[in-house]
Image (tube, rainbow, N blue to C red; front, side):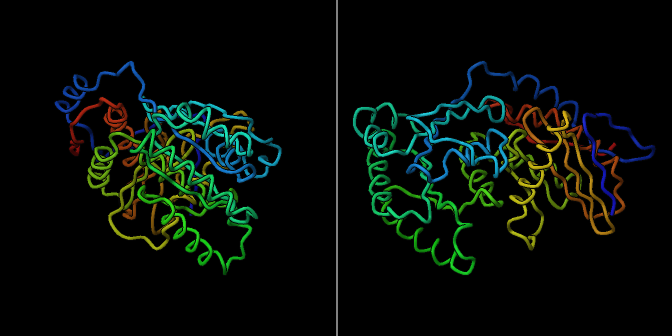
Length: 351
């Protein structure tokens, strides 16, 4: 097996005689006309709620502020509401409201601050400590949130994170989560509720947040369609798009089922940790190639907001060809990220 890692480098060298794919010039011309950048950002309000100590701020810090799990122990309790704006894929901005979970604050959210907190919400994320000794109170506050959401933002999507699952014995996790999920879905009616089991110590946190953010991307179907075309043209087994800062998976294509259903989140977790290690050395992660006799995996900067991972199982395709294909697709995918971006599909041909 060979592993190649590039740090602070973006130079590509074309190997002689290598076949590559490139975007049709006519497609590029039409894209340049259709893909003018909008000056107005699309803001999506995300409420992060749950009782004090449930782990809300820890998970937010890991996903959006580049904390590692052990460093979250020094985080203090959230006072009232902490606001943060996270730019995500060009024009999309997540307006994240991390709401403190102390009883006094929770009561204020449902009375004097009700309209301010629950108006224009795109997503409600409610975090439950799986080992909470006040489950009845947790459920009461959750139902109060749902009532306020129904009144002020009836179209909001609702997600429940059953958190700190690492504290539950492994042979009990499936049963406990299933019981909690059934209770939460029943209590959430008439709203639909999607539940995830999470822990800051494994990849489950990335699975949950990738799924949540996926719901907020405005042109995700168009993005996936073009990603599929790209993968088929370069004969890739699998292609993944990661958001550049958080390394959350935002889109993927695979030509066949894979054995490990959790591989995306595991890769996110591993690469995010490696990126943090690079930053401690004042270096920035650029790309990685892993190759053996069965496959080649490439992770490279794709657009200004994404990394791409390409999996190839055909050993006859040189690394240089795949890297040039990635480079040639960048301009098209840059335009797709814009909320008002092009409606064209990716057209490429062999040179």
